[in-house]
Length: 208
Image 1: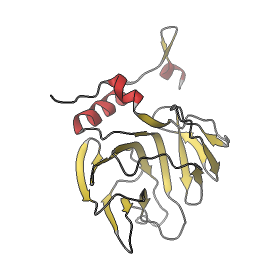
Image 2: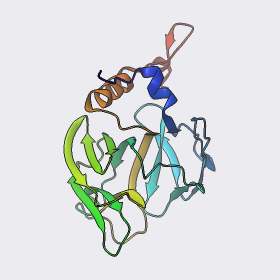
Image 3: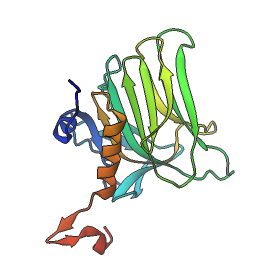
Image 4: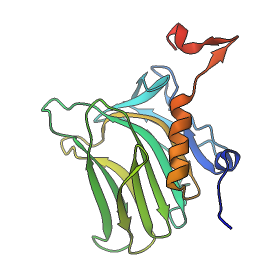
């Protein structure tokens, strides 16, 4: 029998839900999952995002969580909207990378992808066993075969003159299951059509 996750089941599997809707000047980015893994901000700011606000990094800012909660030794899925900013020289930071570090010396796997500047892309990184699938806007763009369970993973940018990334993040979620391509497509379809109303009036009519 085929296992199909319903929307309700997916909500139960969310272990990080960070919409980045905080106002400019906020010191925390709140997690709306059950675990409440809020992040302390340093040098990051909130600006207009895809819908509502997003968090913006300028190469030095960061958002830190003190606890380890991602199930690296089992299956998981990370989804996020990412928009890389145009770097002043026009070419630095043009690639987004997915990096998994496994036990041992130089025992890592990575993949890099060219992305357009100032354009939102919906990324999904799915670890299923030792295979990692990378999706961009619901299309499979690459796979990584891990030699063992990873000790850590990250989303990177090819900027070497600063310590951190240069761009924006919005609606970051982590699930403790490996979502299928069909489920990822459903997620982006839901996010694209999401609208908010108050007393029958669309928030967008008020610039929200």
